[in-house]
Image (cartoon, rainbow, N blue to C red; front, side, top):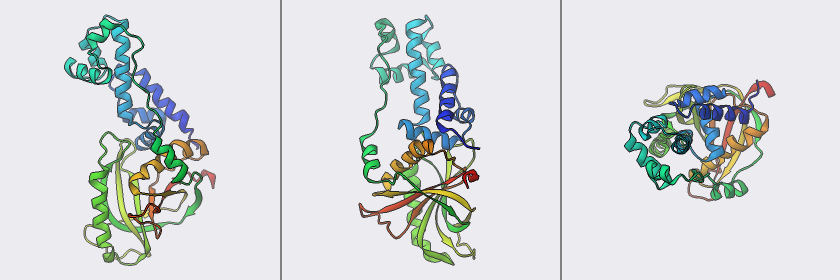
Length: 295
């Protein structure tokens, strides 16, 4: 079944708007949208350039503006409705956002005061122009056997983002140990990204290499099987640190307008002969699995 991603995101936003006075669980937002938590957060981040948790917090703060102006609710009760545990923490966050305390704002009664809307990032737009293939290669990937090192992490779509602490060290460890992997195929390496659970934004990442058959897996490494699947593969040019710009495009622009559906399988980073971490001409391929209904 095809997914209308824009409609799904709107369903999630509608749920948030209807529940601003209550605790909002991100997994429930994604469930209302009919998308797994990671994919909802990935698409939302690509569209808005902010995390879902940050958006929810800003909308609940903005909701508190209306209550301060149009109701006689106590500030402490407004704080609780906005998800804060105390009036003090609410006042600090409010002042950080609006440069006024809630009490000062209530006295000012300025209805024109709203949270600033995010603007498109210039770096991202320049990236789209120069460093990403806007039309992917659609292809059928055969079943793959891989061996490598793995970790779990939170991506840039999560408020718990810890990529910088997890992935560079994992790759350094794996590259040094590639000679230990028996029956490896060529020199291409893969970053394999997959969800740990549908209702979580915790991800599992493998730095791996394909093998022709599984032999003894080196100590501390793991094997992974990627089933046959149809993929859309994009070309990313430039530093690996800017790869998130390409992934934002894939999820927020191409996938939403393609009529395709992500299958829920693992995404792949492909590091082949054209990858050079020290060159601006370096190439990484990023591939997402598509639902088989289009075959």
